[in-house]
Length: 368
Image (spheres, rainbow, N blue to C red):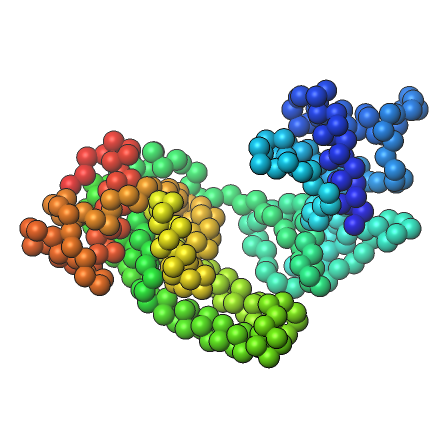
């Protein structure tokens, strides 16, 4: 509460003074401090901070958040009303936390009267020995308190995609589906020739488990007068969330491991059109295998980078309608395709090959 009150104070001050604060964020932060904090010269300031004993890094975290929120408000044409109340998470910078490990952390907190060190027990993910923990954030989710800890880790290969493709390394392209085999992963050489294929299975299992939870949720909502919230229904929404998290981690990990196994240093993901996202994704449902691809995609980006693989996103327009062998328009029937020249096969694999070749062509490669 204190953090958000300090944030609100600096947010309003920034918007009122922004005409005189057209500089970089660091200089703006310094200017806001000079307007609110009495310096060594003991001179009065025009807008004294209403609270006493606000720690330096606590205050600066709030100022940075206020500047970001203020710039966002000024940049939005549609946001005609300023933010009246913040519920931001608190980032604990240097001096605000200590003794962070997998089991506990000590946080400097305000109890309403004084700043005290609070010993907090932790559970959840573990840290890798190669990871450097950065400043944690405390996030309130209902009655649950989560500590989010960003980490820094050295990756085995920091080269850009252009260098990898120029060096003739393998690439892998992914096509997502709404079937049991929810993703097709095709590994190709730098000339666009198919080397190996992996169908990621489990879409039917995920959709089935989500459907069972939804059916239970619907019965629970009817029993409580069709209320969408409340504790009685919250546990079912959390089950859906955990299923989404578990399977998106599982499938993204399978994709990355297959890329590593077959030495693919570039992973190509499809970028769908606005109409596809609006109609096809929406029609598939929030708990479908196809909709799960959004979470798989997000997790792939950091997991692949951690494994030394660069993730690229390529426009998927046309990849599903042309034959990967001859380039003619194809006819689709269920999961298969046929082209006028007699070529046939799995249409999702065909799309993945076209996607990979389209990416290679964007780097000036001559493909087959």
